[in-house]
Amino acid sequence: MSTRAAQALARPFTLGSAQLPNRIVMAPMTRGFSPDGVPGEDVAAYYGRRAAAGTGLIITEGTYVDHPSAGDIGSAPRFHGEAPLAGWSKVVAAVHEGGGKIMPQLWHVGIQRQAGNEPFPEAPSVGPSGVALDGTEGAGEALSLAEVERIIGAFADAAQEAERLGFDGVELHGAHGYLIDQFLWERTNRRSDEYGGGLVERTRFAADIVAAVRAKVSADFPVVLRFSQWKADHYDAKLAETPQELEQLLAPLSEAGVDAFHASGRRYWEPAFPDSGEDLNIGGWAKKVTGKPVITVGSVGLDQVFGMDTFRGAGAGVASVEALLERLERDEFDLVAVGRALLADPEWAQKVLEGRESELVPFTREAIKNLY
Image (cartoon, rainbow, N blue to C red; front, side, top):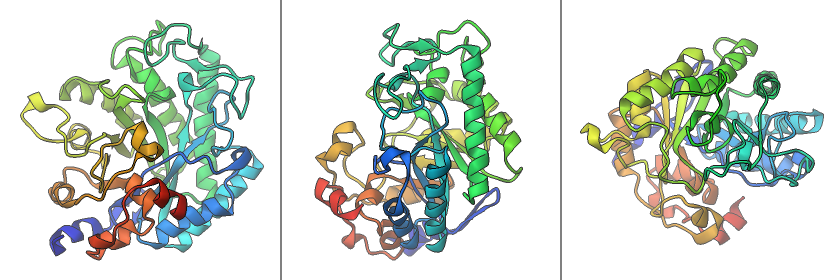
């Protein structure tokens, strides 16, 4: 790797009140290591280790907001209640001690919830219209307006707690077919009220969450929104077919107060809109149409594209990030999120920044087991 390319990642970046030491971000990855929703000392050590090894910004695994239908994994962390919040306070301290910044990813799984699962077995599966990602009707309950308002408030309350605990910003999980994304997607949002309709109308739920969060945190406290075209097990899904539609989708969210977009693609090198004549990925287009800072993500540092089989341990080898850094040098996007590669190798950032790529650890089941 060239010195010039390495310098592209080493540059500091300012995002609101967060002064990031470099352009490397740890992508959120669900682990299920928080019994009863409480992140313990091991979770603090897990994130702190990666911060100490040069990761500039940690975005935590998805953490459930205060709504009984928000999640369906009892050992996934929550972002409400005395014990979980006390645990997160220790995580923040560990990351800051390591020299990094940290944001929680606030999460509601929506219709993807398996009814009967923990942490609240009696809670129903809910979504905009009760429609599953595959289009099956009656897969859960359609949210009433009262419940919509309750969930909006839960996101805002969680963001307020995040600032109180010393986090450096928040990320709202609006990607991969979870609740916010379900409102954005035509297949799962068939509402006829103010939260449904055309492309722009379907952004209202997300925009209302952003606005509610903005009202409860400081003006310079960063609010990041993660979005994606693809959904869980629906990799060809699209919210926007053209750059013009992407602009229509993101503009209301930007206006509501999003400070940066986290554009989730499965392959960072693929053009989002090949017919446009430009090779920008989805993050590049998000930056172009909104003017806001953008985090790119998608199989960074690995030779196998993300899929549930690889995440469950099928494995992936180390791949060069030279092409990624060339895109970063020309400011196609601002920050780079690393997922599985950083899960397997806590020192990924330090090794890349120091030109020690030969020491990088491949993503394997054994590596994950050893290096959590």
